[in-house]
Length: 43
Image (cartoon, rainbow, N blue to C red):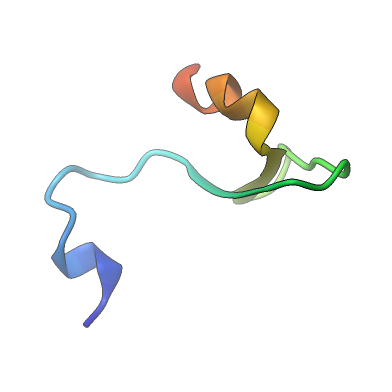
């Protein structure tokens, strides 16, 4: 089953959250350290 079947609200941003140091917020899917989760809230 696809995740889009569970989520009824349109997805504005996508991200992979992990414990590493490298981050990329310039692509379709953001790569973020878990300490910077707040960056996803700024649409």
